[in-house]
Length: 277
Image 1 (cartoon, helix red, strand yellow):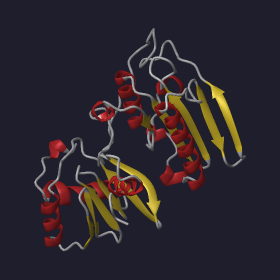
Image 2 (image 1 turned 60 degrees about the horizontal axis):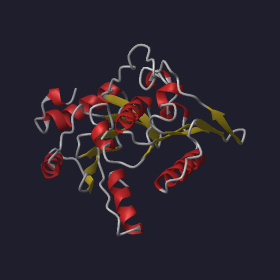
Image 3 (image 1 turned 90 degrees about the horizontal axis):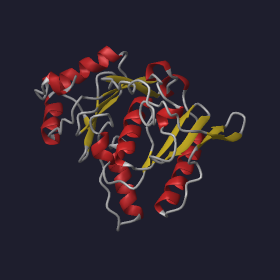
């Protein structure tokens, strides 16, 4: 508990297979870094929770000609589709122009753990087929899963000629992608949880941050290579990644979460506000 997810995942993968190389990236994917992350990959498997970074990933995969396995889930529902650049519809052909602020979120409606396992398993199956040189089952199709009704349905999907991202006769410009500074995610033990994502990768000095937190009277629970977790003033915990991303548990509002971020990162470490907003 309290360790960065990417660090724990990398450790677990190395335990399962010590012969593989794992490069954990404690980053928030966006339009500015998506192409660098995608470059050189054989396949991308979607584990994101918002449409804005998915659109950034979709566009980066199209440019790099990297297969992208889209997967999404909320409540008891889930969707999977395999996107092959130049051959299948892109994400914005069949799920374009969706505003995250208008969509249901895990923080409000929740998500059933079982549907996550199902969607992830289907994605892994598709990724395995691509790596082995076999045709993916969900190219030009979308699989819809409904655990409430215990139904699974395959839907045929087609490229949209006027798609502004991949269409042969694009109409208009691609939807502008705005990175939100503060986002609310799924709550924990009755507390609200917010994520503050800076504009740039801050590459924080974790030793300096640790000393600063101790001097300010915070109790650090976990100090890892890519992040640390400490007890905050809201009765919960706060985790900070080396990239500058902060997850704040217990704040009452986005404003309160940002003010806490400002105190610890911007003022505490003398980080220019222009690197954040």
